[in-house]
Every structure is written in structure tokens, then in C-alpha cells.
Length: 336
Ligand SMILES: CC(C)(COP(=O)(O)OP(=O)(O)OC[C@H]1O[C@@H](n2cnc3c(N)ncnc32)[C@H](O)[C@@H]1OP(=O)(O)O)[C@@H](O)C(=O)NCCC(=O)NCCS
Image (cartoon, rainbow, N blue to C red; front, side, top):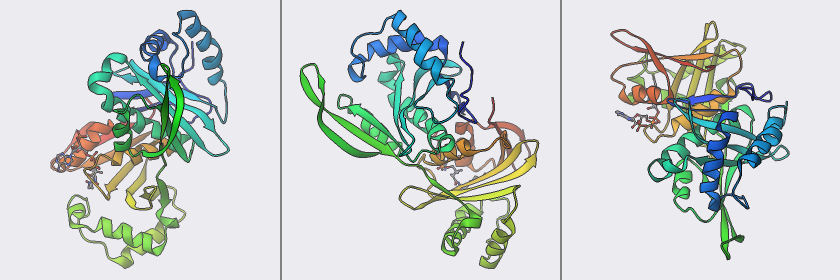
């Protein structure tokens, strides 16, 4: 009934291991109706939806969403586990003048008790690819009636900042309740060729840390002159791209490099400046969302005893495609 991609996006589907987001599927409409009706208390919805309401809504507003060629007002996705819809939501009230949008998400009501944090966290990681990577938004935010305080620590551990409380902003069962707004900004991604000398020295310091070097294919420390010569050599090269990634507060989050291997496959290297905090996937998904059409799969090689990296690649959805005594070979297709 609906296409499987949005005409306004270069890529409409993203996966994180077993989980994925795909443009909102027609077949999920009654599941969603049931969840919305069960959770009506925290939604801006005046009365329970009927099947006719839902059919009408999908036939009008949702059908229209698939025709917008640029600057959509909203983009909604089904959230899947192993292909089965277990939630939905997206970006709504997209403001193109100010480049911001509100995040919406609800999950299957029966998952809320035990898997609330897991699914919100996955959702927000995947949505980064769309909001920041594909649409280039500058800010996304949640607008929540103050009825579910257990949502706030989940948002904050996904990098959102509590930005505002609108006092007694909604009327709920005869009582005025606050609205709480949490916001998130993208990482800044800079090609090494556009970095300042100080930024390049910081990148080199990260690369030369003994704990990082020991995990690299080339384990020797890199001299400052060699580093600058290497970066100079990158200028104008389309087949080798090196990026420094900065968090919104300006700190170096890590480095990311891509080398063209032909046939749409690019070898990608990644180093986190703050490993082990579960944050690397946040910026990698933004970068995955920024990949152009010339990239259809990423490859990576990882030492089998680099357990954090093995685990990380598995979690993100890289598949093991080979193994030799020194390395595990991974592949992440982007267009499945
Ligand atoms: C590989 C790397 C980019 C992963 O980023 P990260 O921020 O550490 O990733 P996460 O914090 O999400 O951790 C990934 C997983 O590894 C696990 N992990 C972390 N350290 C671990 C360790 N020493 N042993 C086993 N597992 C570990 C985490 O628990 C997490 O699994 P979980 O989500 O199931 O809990 C980062 O560790 C890094 O920069 N390492 C050094 C450079 C490197 O190895 N790059 C890759 C070269 S192939």
C-alpha cells in the first residue's frame, strides 16, 4: 500500500542489530491504534481511535507523507524487531526555518514494563541517522506531559539535556500538569583537511595513546611531521576520508575514517575518545545517516582479543564474513 522509502530521503531504513526503522507500514496501523488507545493518557489525543479513524488517517495524512519530495513536515517510521513492528514514531513538527523537530515514539504497551529503556535508547540511536544524518537538523526535542518521570533518565542517558519545564501547561484529569522538554544536538563532523593545527594535534594524541595503538594494524606511534604530511596528502582525495567528530560541547568524541574498496564497499575505522560509555553508536549512526549513495556497505577488521570492539561491531549489526589468525572481518550492508 505504501512505498518502502520516502522520496525526500536518500536512505529511509536503518538497522541496529535485530532492530530497525522503516517508513511507517500500512500493515501496522491497527497495532498502533491499540497501543495509542492503551496509552492515551500521555498522548495528545482527545478520545480513543476507531478502526475507521485510523483507516482515514492512513489514507490521508500518512499517504500524503509519502509524496513530499523535500522539506517534510513529519516523517513517521515503524520500529521493528526481527521484522515485527514493536513501536512507531518519528519526527514531527519539523521546523525548516530553525532546523528542529519534535521526537515522537510509542512502543508496544506490553514491552513498557521491562524493555522501556532498551527500546527508547535504540529508537533514539536510529533516529539520529534520520534527523541529523539525512535531514541535517540542528536540534531534536521531546515534549512530554509530566506523567512519566521514568522517561527522563532514559532520555538523559541517551544524551538529551533537560531544557525547559512549561509550568501547568496541560490539563490532565482535572489537574494542570507541567510539560517537560528535553533536547539533543548533533555532533560536528570535520574532515581532517579542514581541521586546525590544534585539532589535528588532538587527533594525533588520541591515535598515539598506547591503549589505542596496541589495537591498530600499524602499532607504531606516528610522528607529528608524518601526521601533518598524511593530512596534506588527503586533500583532494575522494577515496580516503578522515573525520574528527566533536560533541555539542566541543570535546573530541572520536575519529572516523573511510577508504574506498570499490563496488560501493568502504573500509571504515573508528576510534572513540571516551570508550566504554555506550556513546560511540550515537555518533556512528549520525555518520551512517550522512553516507552518500556511493557507500552501500562498510567493512571492518577487528582483532579477536579486542573484546570491546568485537562486541561493539556485533551490537551495531556488522556481520562476521571471515576470520584469519589475526583478524575478524566484518561487513555492514547499508541498503537491506
Ligand atoms: C571499539 C570502540 C569504537 C567501541 O566504542 P565504545 O564506546 O567502547 O562502545 P560501547 O561503550 O558501546 O561498548 C561496546 C560493547 O563492548 C562492551 N565492552 C566494553 N569494554 C569491554 C571490554 N574491555 N571487554 C568486553 N566487552 C567490553 C560494552 O559492554 C558494550 O557492550 P554492551 O552494549 O552489550 O554492554 C571503542 O572501544 C574504541 O575506540 N576502542 C579503541 C579503538 C578500536 O579498537 N577501534 C576499532 C578498531 S577495529
